[in-house]
Image 1 (cartoon, rainbow, N blue to C red):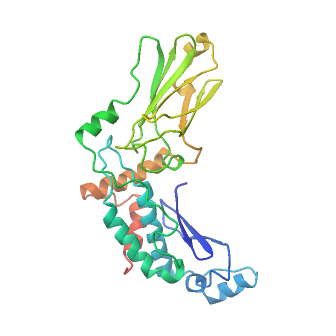
Image 2: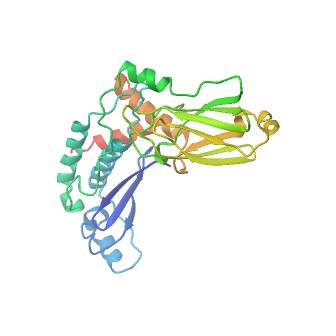
Image 3: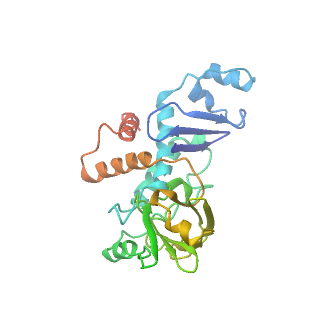
Amino acid sequence: MITLALQARGATLEWPLLHAADPHLTVHDPAEADWLHLLIGESAYVDLVRGRDWAPVWEDALAARLRHLAFGHWLRAWWPTSPLDGIPPLDPSLLDAEIAHLSDLLDEVLAFSPDEGTTPPPLSAPAPTQADYALVAGAAPPPTPSAVLSGHGPVAWQGVPAGRIDAAENSLTWVLEVLERPALALAVALLPGADPSGLAVTVTAGPARAAGVLDAAGTATLDLPLSPAAAWALEPADVTVRVGVPVEETGAERASIRALVAGRRSGTPDHNGPLYQAEQALLRDDW
């Protein structure tokens, strides 16, 4: 599940991204989190400090403002920039200005500057040009006469650092070849100027498993511990390629985010989408 998270004084708040809900609150230091009485109520805060069971009575306006700030931080890190899908990067100056404004309003809760402890990810690259589109579209290894199988797949957004790999659902392309021994060549579509060097790659092909890392061009070739005959017997569904760390993230979640982005860019948002409804619930408050 994709989540929003916000680090506050003495506590961490988390929300599901794709639907509106009360925050999940993890208290690290009740004394430092003395602002919590504003969010969960005086009685609940007293019970929390005294180590008793506590039942929050949420202050909805404050909770919504905190979620809005967490959403801004999430956008700064995970906006689905994609030359392949034609999604340009957000304007970082406008987004950072909104984050700074909300952080000022929540100074009592945060007690640090909006940029303290955070480093903006590299999402401020220039908008992709036609040359960039051609570059990422042509990055895949071409099939050869020795190719046994080929396929496409996604890269989980939460499994890799932001601002490096194109957010399109088919940004990963692979080709299984049999030369002296079976090997799988893969490539990921990169954002302009990105360096994915060292990102982990894991391949499962039937009973075989192999691991490696991407190079600066976003490619890798992994030898598979398979006989040529076993490689020829494989089907595309037998091959799984993962880039980055393992995470629980579904294509449906990514599709919901793309639907929001497409609606914003076209001016015709999907009013039935869960992410759109959740965001509108926040925007009804007076910031």
